[in-house]
Length: 340
Ligand SMILES: [Zn+2]
Image (cartoon, rainbow, N blue to C red; front, side, top):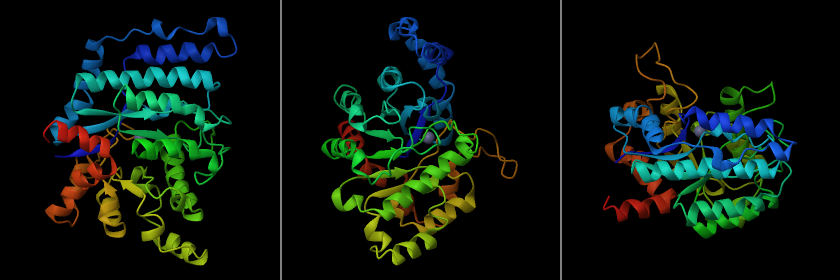
């Protein structure tokens, strides 16, 4: 089977965005805050938005399952305070739970109610709800809830440890995923996302997080940002810092997805990074939605690139399914329960 470990609900009915707008407009005026119960989205609307978009493309491309989370750019953790983020995350996660109930092709990954300057331990009740009540299999962790100003300590800092302790307890991985950039220097999906991916790898290289948490697993999305392309630089820096070889220092814990939108990028990724660390993903429907005039195919039809890479069938199977089942044990358990 083919597991896509990176998809977001980017096609939610307009009512979701309208509710969010009214919430943002009410910041500073508690009496004007909209009631979450005032947001009405029917199962029929959810069905339609999924069937005509993500599911239609998955069927066309032969993707069996997508690990599905709320729209990343909508998380916007920099807006409002913890209470604003908390209400918003609860609404977004519940929608994912409903999608998971309507379609076996989608399995939930939680958004956390992060807020700049707030202890990440405050995210734990929502994380637990998503694991215990919703049966989700992973979380998205935003290393920069300030939205492009990088005011939080690095991922290796004890600041983040309460979240890591819960991840180990539930045996879930985190996709390290930023949200909208509110810093005009950084385009959200063209610069901020890739900067954050690269930054996450470098933070882990500099520290010794996986010495403290040997079982912690991070998926660094968008092909790992610039990390695989500059792997020689990172190996050289590790050498100068007297760190162990990256295979031992990082690659028991860090995985890269295949959200790289051209063949040479996937060729490089699969050549440079051990295949046990590469997970199939498309981020469909996401940042790049058009058709590549050079190939006539959608940029985000990443299955084509994996099929086009110089790999054996066994290696492809590892990228398409085997690695995801190892990195997401709760997903593996669900699939086994289904007899898959
Ligand atoms: Zn994403």
